[in-house]
Image (cartoon, rainbow, N blue to C red; front, side):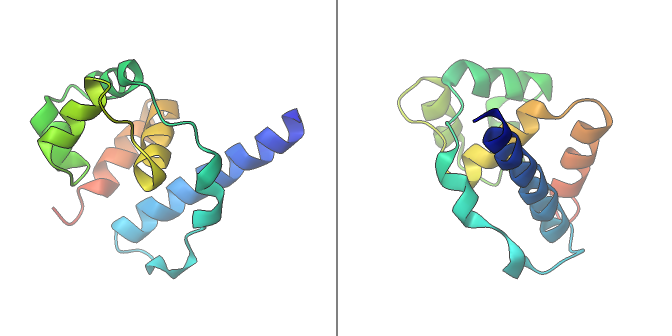
Length: 113
């Protein structure tokens, strides 16, 4: 079981890197592997708050960073809704990013902003 989870984690890291490459204009978006996203446990409201705070962003800044409405972020942080699909994958990837990885993710998401 641990080997299977490690393979899925590796796949998610690959998907996050691919997403960032697509977002940065370095690659077209036709190779993204959406089928791996269905096993993601959505981040809890505390995790969403922690990710946002680790980026030193307000809710409105975080919403703009993720290309979402501020009320979506508020709903996640209040526990009314949970991120799903691509949002859950991106947040899980950001939660696992440290130092240079986090800076690269932030920079890539803002290349065309």
